[in-house]
Length: 214
Image (tube, rainbow, N blue to C red; front, side, top):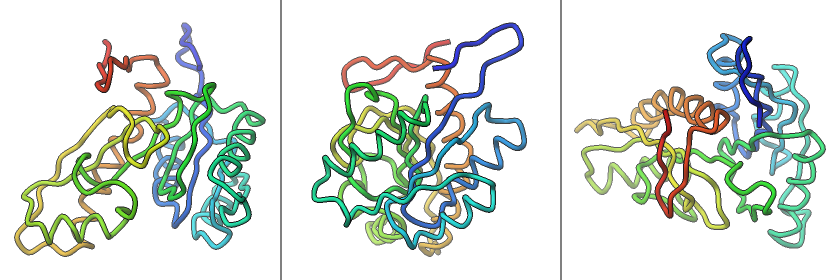
């Protein structure tokens, strides 16, 4: 991954994976444009041809490739196609932004694939817990706090070592939409921070835990 020099750190190359509206992708684009995230996005990969994020990516001048999950016979073949594209575009990190397909991470991308989940893992996570399903479950359960989790991706849903978590309150009159917005506001700050930490080699994995190095 990029190393620092006297002029600052080289921009980290991010391949962003999407399945939906691309709100995480747009946030990263805004952060890059504002100079608060030292990165570039050479490619966006969508697992669905009808994902709203495809048009939003193109509006930001980004190249988009569709790897439709239904066109591949297995998780393995789908994942291999995705990571071959990541290699061709010289990705330093692979960023899941609302990406709903299970990935099998090859050895050369181990600890280089990040995901964000809209809850405090291990609560309300795993297969079937995505988007508003997470916020509806949190409100129904009556928890007082929720938040977001950025973690490394392994070969299970929402399972890899946790990099960062941010906590937000769940208010007595919350709707799923209101809670989703509060969590997304936290995500918008936390995901770029986590990307910078990993890109700058400041995250050390010890067993199932991570340590943030100075």
